[in-house]
Length: 103
Image (cartoon, rainbow, N blue to C red; front, side):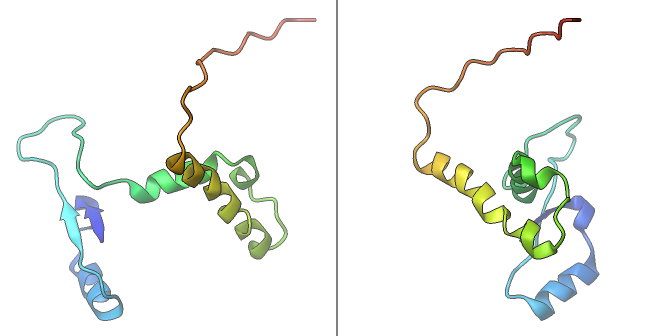
């Protein structure tokens, strides 16, 4: 399990060792670095939540039960998986939206 330096906690290490079969590795910034630095093997969970946020139905919690809202996670993740299997040859051209005209 990879974590950044914020999650450097010996209680976490003990819990993971007692309850799971994983090892914890803390990914640190290089010494003397300033500003933003790209680090290897990071933000996998955050990317997943960002991809789920692209699904309009999952952006707001308006379902009556947790089961019904959780059932939309699987279809929402099918799109990125299909895109990995067969990426599109042409990406759509980026365009800004036209400003709304006053009627």
